[in-house]
Structure formats: structure tokens, C-alpha cells
Image 1 (spheres, rainbow, N blue to C red):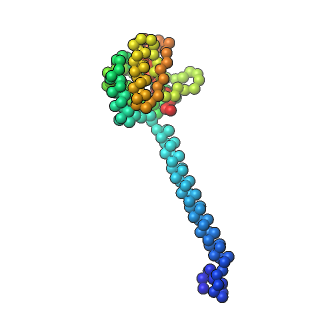
Image 2: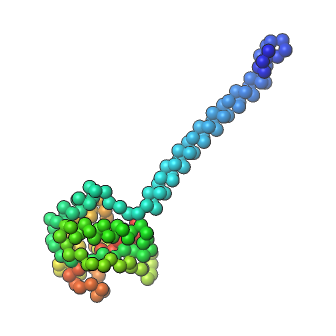
Image 3: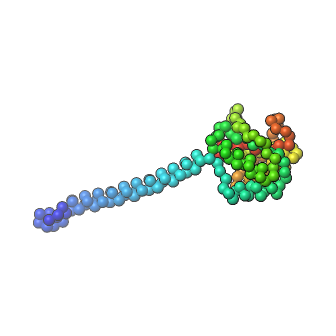
Amino acid sequence: MNIFETADGSAHWPSIITMLGWLIGSMVTGGVLLATLHYNRNERVRVAEEKAPWRLSPQQQQVIIERIAAGPKGKVALEFSAADRIRVRDFAHTLSALFGSAGLEVWGYIPAFQEAAGPPIVGLRIGVKPGVAESVGLSLRDALAAAGLVATVYPINNNNYADDFAVVLVGVKP
């Protein structure tokens, strides 16, 4: 005699149904648990990627160097957002090294900028004044686009740099 039989040897259906309920319930609960763990893992990976520093792959770096080397030469300065300093500072220095190795004259210091009003700058912005800086800025925009990065070109009207400098602002990581 076992727990699924009555005293006369016939099936004890309440015990069988209860056991099947526990078994099915455990399988469903296990499936839900595994699905939740998988979803949470994917979510953790996504969040980690969002919080990671901004980086370029070796292929992106090569494309940027090749495109800039083939374009007009000039002067460029870079600044990075103080609002996202941890994730964008090294990226600004990487861009500076790439621009220099492609033949551009790069300003020697990369300061942090602070937005005084409005939302922080997101992504890359290239400030230019008419003339040489504009052609260099447009070439930079195209080189960055070829590497999969979006950069917008805008007119600048301050005197922080000489008129022949294109100024690349590395904003908050998108």
C-alpha cells in the first residue's frame, strides 16, 4: 500500500489530484522563475551598458581616422560635459587622439563645460564659424556619421577659441 491507494487497494483520487496539482504548480512556478531570472539578467545587462563609459570600437576608430585624413585639415578643440564627466571624459580624449593622428591640429587642453540653463547637451555637437572651421566641422560630422555616431553642426558666436577652430562638444552619453 502507498499514499495513492486506499485500504482496499483502489486509487485514492484526492491524493493523486493533490500531488498532480503540486507537481504542475511547481513546474509553472519554476518556469515563471526562470523567465524572470532571464528577463532580469537582460535588464541588468542593458542598464550596465547604459551606465558604461562611452567607447569606440577599433573599427569605428579606423573609419574616423580614414575619413578625417581624407578631408580638409584645420584646427579643432574638444570639451566634455561636466554633467556626465565619468562616462564622457575619456571618450573626449580618445576623439582628440584620433583627430590628431588623422592630421588635425588639436587644442592641447580638453576642459569640461557646464550648461548654465536648459537640459544638458546629449551626444556630439560641433560648433563652427564660417570659413575654414565650417569645412572642418562638416568633415568631422561626416567622419563621425560614417562610424555610426550622430553629431550636429551649429554656429558658435563666442570668442572662447579663434575663428578657425571647430569646437566639438562631447555631451551626455546618449
